[in-house]
Image (cartoon, rainbow over all chains, first blue to last red; front, side):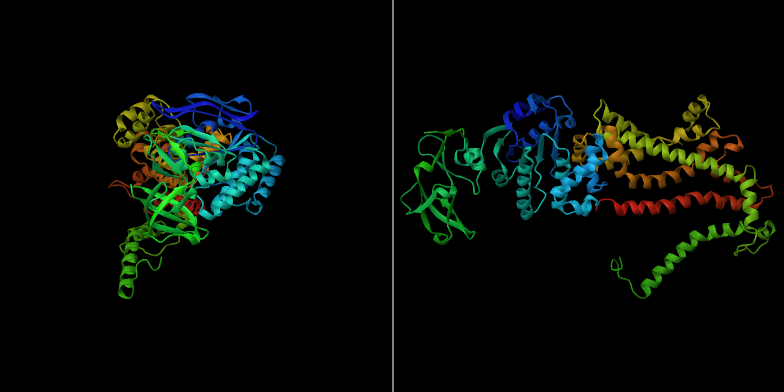
Amino acid sequence: MAEISLRGVRKSYGPTEVIHGVDCEVADGELIVIVGPSGCGKSTLLRVVAGLETISGGEVWIKGRRVNDLEPRERDIAMVFQNYALYPHMSVFDNMAYGLKIARVAREEIRARVEKAAAMLELTPYLGRKPRELSGGQRQRVAMGRAIVRNPAAFLFDEPLSNLDAKLRVQMRMEIKALQRELGVTALYVTHDQVEAMTLADRMIVMNDGRAEQIGRPLEIYDDPATTFVAGFIGSPPMNFLPDPEGGGVTGVRPEHLQLCTPLEGLAAGRIRFTEALGAETLAHVALDGGGLATIRLDARAAPREGEAVGLAADPARLYRFDAAGARLRA
Amino acid sequence: MSGMVERRGWGLVFTHLALIAGLAVVCFPIWVAFVASTVTQPEIVRPPLPLIPGDRFIENYTAALFQGVSTPVWRMLMNSMVMALGITIGKIAISIISAYAIVYFRFPFRMVFFWLIFLTLMLPVEVRIVPTYEVVAGFGMLNSYSGLILPLIASATATFLFRQLFLTIPDELAEAARIDGAGPVRFFIDMVLPMSRTNIAALFVILFIYGWNQYLWPLLITTKPEMNTIVMGLKQIIPSSDDVANWPVIMATAMLAMLPPVLVVIFMQNLFVKGLVESEK
């Protein structure tokens, strides 16, 4: 049975509709990442699930209950916010215990649950401290601890890592995934970072302009994007789009599927504008003769010089064709 | 701090001289009043003004506290204390609750109410004193503590201050508390109040002094000597031309009138600074 189920979820602010009907069934223990550019409605969708925003149409079900009209606390969820939202005047212990205190859980039970969560998150030495005495990563952990102690049906994460520096972000990403697996809890995770989405997700919802453009496993989406938006958004560097000779659409090809060839053969020709040597590989940016840029992922030692004229070739099986509206054309 | 403005030699000496001179100008009258409250009546009236405290401290202050000129000073001090505390606590309680309502609840005409409160800034007691007197008299509250306190209890300034403070509390905090299951009252008690405590301390100091120093309103509505406040009492003990003034007792009364606001500033400042250090950043 689905743990969370979104059925035609819509949200409008006055006359403006920002979510145009999203359907998704989330299985028990699944980690679903909602990814999209800013303003696509991903955070709003999460807040509708949490009950922080009212729903304008459709239904949200959590653990077999229709929760449309329930208060957030009655929905059996816990949420981790981007800015942590820790209570600044309370100790770490009190921050984690607050929800349980309100729920009138027995004092010993609260202590046991908070200590267990703190041990899991390596926060035990900090239980007596105030949030301002902690580093960003530790605050993030307290926010997660606050979610864990409540033992909810689902975790909702709203861009939890965007306030951390790059290195810590990678580390916390792994920790979140490990923790979610260990607890076996269902999670919805919102991010604008497609790398975060790819690495964390069991399945992801790629959102654009209030619509779920594609829902699927990360590699499925990477290998088989449904629209130009998804193809361009997922993958770094993004997919290259070349004008399609037949019809008004475009042909997409991923940087790693392009090879260099002599200028007159292949799909397109151009000059190397500049190269980025990353060590294991080199990215070459080619200014195409017909206008536009294309990126090729090359072996580090086989990189051409800047300014060199090159041709681009690709295996026809690796080409993705899209129509003028951006939808995928399947052979 | 030391490196903020570099001053050496004569510049430094001059700055200090100017500061000391300023301090002396402010402190000298207070010192004279204190000295006058510790000597005998003939010593004050005799031409060279005494500048060294005398030996009548206990006698003069006892006389002021328990006999006074018309009303015992302890009675007026108590009246002032009740009025100042009533105004302070009432103002803080009302303004923090109304600011909470305006910031966190969406109700019809919310902004209308906010602007109505804000408009009252333009109507201090002095402007509306006749109609207010009429209302208070109509309720039979002349010569009563409620008559002294209630007309002064609403505060647009404090409401506005708390509103600005609440607007800086991130929305996520309210949302996190909502998910944790805190209703509006719990959120107010567990989050908003503790986070406002430095502002409450600062307002307490300001409003206490405001309340303590009220003059016109108590003068208008208290006619019985036992309801006089100390500030209006001060005015009344200053003799008219043909009376013989008991200056030591008058000066002792003045010193006693100054004491509570000074204590509040000293004591609350400590709390206020501690609150500042403990808060975020």
